[in-house]
Image (tube, rainbow, N blue to C red; front, side, top):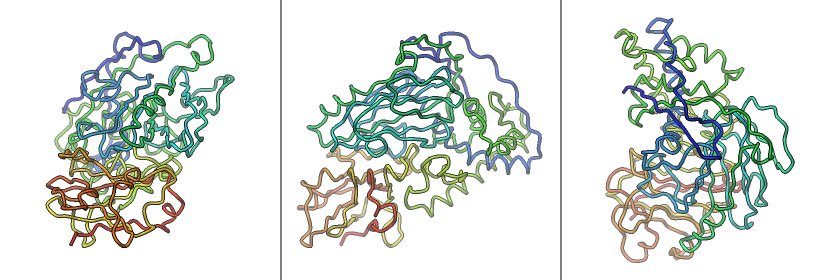
Length: 469
């Protein structure tokens, strides 16, 4: 698949980095300086390292660059809120949550920092702002767990910023990449609560540092010539993934502990701002690079088979600690997932006998009395089809069961709570506890927002999925 490019321009007053102008010029041609066998080994490493970053860029393109995409929200350096939850129509992100209405902003921090201002929010309502850099690391958080519900103004700067902090700033947070995604999640207690969520979202504010401080704005950053991303399927097979990674690395300064890694990548033409001529490669070299990608995907798949929770998949750079396979598993299982302190994710992918789940059977997840997921905020179980990992359309438009629904669920005679998973609605009172599944393969994901210590230390155990009798 050929990577084409889209020039981005913006005239909104909140924008600072994207100016109507020409492209930045044709990229230099990268070259390969190693043998096919060496190239295969490096390509495997680069694929594992780069896949999350390329997939992250695909989502940013859909949300903030491609105005023709049905999921487009608006240009960078704007704040966009959705006063609804995700449905099966939302397909940009795999494994989306349908618990919390979202707000988003994609920050270009090259010219100057951006200030995010949060209102005071009722203490009983959970909310969070997840800050994700171009590596896909969750480098910091704002909100109930991290900074409380009293509000404040938070300055987000890029890696090279050394300016003065004005009065009125609650906290300064420095990112390691030039572009940062902020994902706001605001708890919804039920359909009748949506107007309250809208009112809160209206109080989320964004401003450039100069606008916040009332000082002259700096010169705008250069125009970015954004390449068209690959499709989800092509990301795993197309050599253009490496050219997209080269584009992204322009805005990801080299970290000291990754210099050797970046130097190895350059040996197969992955150079920031440069482009490898895929069509000009010899057949032996092209096959070696493709084999390296396949080798990388095989290692990701092997790790995924042994992964049952998200505990080691999402977090800061220090937490991931160079485990790029885990980072790639996280991207493929549910990119942009929360760090474990913010939300625990438990996967229901097989039944107790080790067999994959399928909607032509009926399953039960039984929480014994007193053993519902321990959450300081709330918990949910959400249904996804496979292999797409999207929400499942069904006649009753029910995509999850969560703790706010407990008053409407039926409790078993022994005090336990049973949740039924199947494509066919069960009879009687069991229908109240039914989570509709597709007719074919599926998985369910449990989220525990702001989990208690017993979730994180393993004291509380996630139940298995059982075939219903």
